[in-house]
Length: 433
Image (cartoon, rainbow, N blue to C red):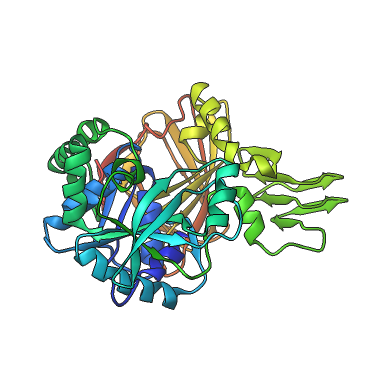
């Protein structure tokens, strides 16, 4: 979906994308750009989550440093649009409103009483391209939604916005000056890191955590709305993904290794284990390699309650994923126990890890696919599939992929202390410490 979003804003009339993401996702973002042969204007790394207003403040200030007349199109990465050409035309028409100082929201004609979206009430017509916003309503109750649909003056708030960077900063300075102050400090404290710009941690943490909707759009008198008259969906829940997917004759949607017996209107997704259901209806089942979610599909919006419980119990799954992206590729933890860890490592073509050693662990490498060029102390040699090597603790080593296809290998770590912190880098192509 992120890749599709990037492609949706490529070419005329768009400039290179500016991406704001958590620092944990930086290499995933970089890999998607590389795979699409795209270059970003900026990849801004947030040290912590502070919602969309601080994120957009940082992006706008970065843009203003290069272009005082820059327009910003804000596009979330979890949307689906059916007609890219129609979307481009809508954006071009909305530019006239943005250049006149309006903060433009994109609205969608409702086709059902949806309580999971925000709503926008249209006011007077502006330049035959949109309307002045009369008011925003955030996720109203069902009885209000039914009234809105009968009135016909309300649109869903698609969460897509267009405005000049200057207009956004002016409105933020008026309504939430502390956001501008903290993000400006975060930019001053920030630093470039490879192709990324890392915001200053302490300054960004001091910013209020608030959405652009609450901070500006619901308060400003400069808000306008244009109609996004193409099929649109905010895929913000498993329920929406089930509704948008092609189902079988029993209303079921499945992905991965599944067996569904006497099952109806159920969504099952598995990334690793076989998942079997018998005699159930209206469930969502999602199985990754380290967690399983089971819930009635209509409770999809309540996943956040689970996340809150996991955070309160300091569960490892909240902050770490078994698949971790790095500038050279990625690794996936397969199995761990007392004194050992098994990983699958994938190194991109012509990439290499840092020259490093470990104080507390040894490593065994078994090549599965591709060619591995290994530095092991004073030795340099290549390994082919089904060949292996051993790296003792304390020995400087490096793994490279000299080929044009990905290198895949299995790494077995062994020792008294297994930790990602047990890395002493001697030299690194990517400038890491």
